[in-house]
Amino acid sequence: MVWISFDEHVFRHSWDKVVEAALRKYPNPETPNVSSTDILEREVDEDGKLISRRIISSYWSNVGTDIVRGLTGIDLSKTVHALEISVLDPKEKKYELTSKNYNFLNYITVDERLTYVPHETEPDTTLLKQEWCISVQNLGFQSYLESMMGTTMKSTASKGREGIEYVISQIKEEMEKFATPVVEEMQQLAVTTMKEFNSVQSKLEEAQKMLQEKNLQDELADFITKASSQPDRKSDFSSS
Image (tube, rainbow, N blue to C red; front, side, top):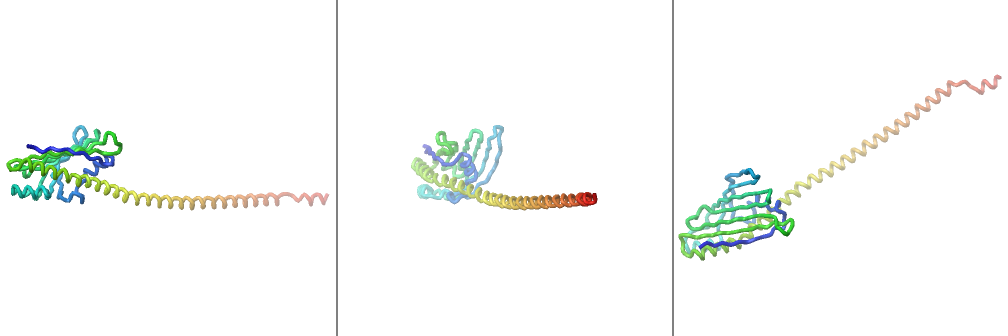
């Protein structure tokens, strides 16, 4: 028997923001069970889709793993490695991730699929569709273990979503920290430029004033020179 379940969640953020956060999801304090991520391969195909393959290492330490250990003797609290394949399609605005554990496969197989798409009816929001498929083999209590592990994973899915929200807030803070010095620098530049402009304008006005005064002095000197060169008409009249 196989345990299958579905769930949905709406992020009150645009698809671009959510996907950027999903790409930068680890590490974050909301999902401390994820110990490392290692990129194996990353490529852009002929359709412009970004395809990535990476190893996600995490710990399955919870009530469910304790029950499995009690019933079967298998310790699932050790590091579990999963192969994750993601396809980011910027044209269709779709980001899909599938993952499967590759240790403990003789006993438990966990397939998970996450799909991020813009919400069809709510602008600037993003819909996350999440699916799980869990199967147990070579152990007793198969149906019980599948249901118990599936229910546990589904209930802890909120931690992953909180991780997305955390990363979004971190990105926002980074942008604000980056923008603040730039704004301050632009403001300071504007103040300095205005001071320089006022200084230049003042010097121009002073130069114009000096030029006007010089022109006036030149005109006055020229007038005096011309006036002194004219004959004394009063003197001529008297002599006559």
